[in-house]
Amino acid sequence: MACGHVKLIYFNGRGRAEPIRMILVAAGVEFEDERIEFQDWPKIKPTIPGGRLPIVKITDKRGDVKMMSESLAIARFIARKHNMMGDTDDEYYIIEKMIGQVEDVESEYHKTLMKPPEEKEKISKEILNGKVPILLQAICETLKESTGNLTVGDKVTLADVVLIASIDHITDLDKEFLTGKYPEIHKHRKHLLAPSPKLAKYLSERHATAF
Image (cartoon, rainbow, N blue to C red):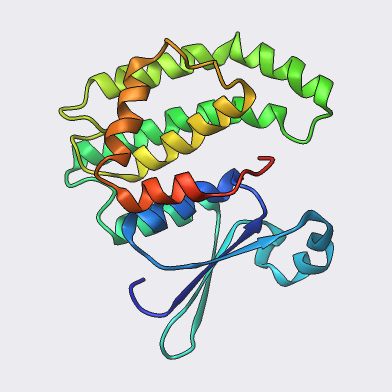
């Protein structure tokens, strides 16, 4: 991926594309971030393989184009290319375990999407008082088992990126939800961004979006 042009195509939001953006930034890969407005999607959809976003389009120096779909598959591909999927089989397992735990949180968050305000508020309260605390505690337990400050030691991996992307979704629902709780998650974010100035800069400068 060091050669050619990388374009990420998604809606004007974080959503399922944000871990891809973040892993590209963390890996130091320059990319074009094409954002589509919902009203333009019907005319663009027929041009997208499978009719689903996000898509990553890689054009090599010869002009050959590779189209990639499925958000986590794309993120894993990028992470593997840049040695961000662990150095051992045990580390790989822990990274995949964390990704799975985060996906459980995301499944709860997705229940709130595309809902009218009153219904979204109701669902948000239900999930934040239901499964989400249990799922976040399981994530904390995984972080406690690390030999360092991140998911596996002190090296940034895909697991770390998907975790903070998901935590941002939870704080979208309730900005105070994490206050005074889940110290391992707060510690994780601090130690992820400190050695990753490009990622910290990206997060501080990204525009606010609805999702």
